[in-house]
Image: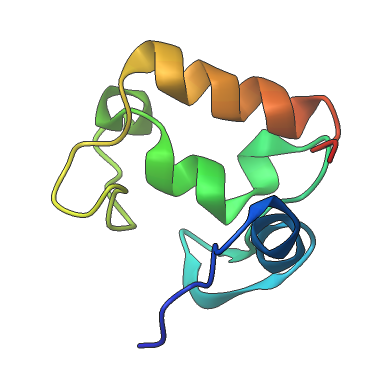
Length: 86
C-alpha cells in the first residue's frame, strides 16, 4: 500500500477531493465527494464506530482506533457537507 501524501494543504486537498480511493471502503470508491459525506470513503473511515451500527466494513482512521472523537468527526462531516471548500 502506498502512503497518501499530505505534505501541505494544497497537496492534501488535491489527494482527497474527488479522487478515487486506493481501496474501496464499504462500497465507496471516492475519498471525498463534495456535499456528500455518506458517499465519501473518508467519512466512513473516520466517523465514530458507534455510527456504523455494527457494520465495520472498513478499517477506521486513525489506524488502530474506533474512529475520531465525535467533535472531530463532526468537523470532517461538516466540511464535506459544505462542499469540501479549499
